[in-house]
Length: 263
Image (cartoon, rainbow, N blue to C red; front, side, top):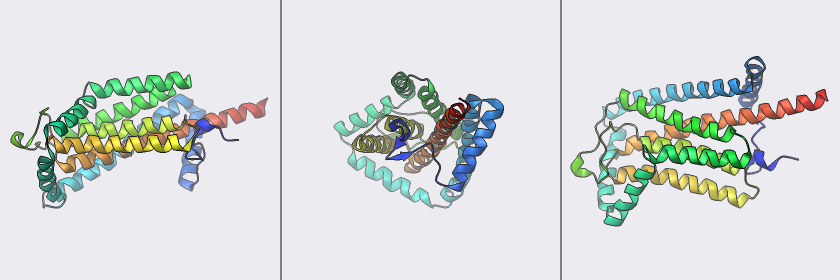
């Protein structure tokens, strides 16, 4: 029987259905045999971060080249004009609340609080460690991206409060929401026994990630392409963190099987 706490939509996350996945799991186990499971998970996260960082750097290079010639930048002006038409006192208030909730203060509290609750429910610190990794990695990529690409935000006259002052690219709110939101949803789904609950969690996470990004454009805090890069980078990092967690579960299963055979 498959443990309900290791499945998402009926699929056991400890198993790998592709050859690259199987090779990755074997490599992870070999590393764990040499340095230990915890260190192997840390190295897996670092490796995933390097892959995401390299992909992001390549995307930034393409972004600079394309926007310098008018490609995706054509989306920014129309998106901002649409955002201005959609604004109203109630809409601005809602978008501002999202900005505060997923901002520099609210997001760390939300991340650590959610991770702590998951850890208490599962009686292990593993969920907290992976949620913290998702948040820490997304923050690092946000800071690096802003230092590499010094893009100005939309003009203040085109924006609505709360106003921002740091470089525009990429959208930190969006990266954080995408990475942490996806990882938290995945960890919560592992604790569900009903398919309907899993669907609800996936829908809530997707809606939240989309809403945070849309709110940044709506307020004029970011250009649309800043948000698109935030979505892709955040979800890329979330994929790396989730993969590392799956490797952790696979290793735990292998170690339990080895212990059982030894008995």
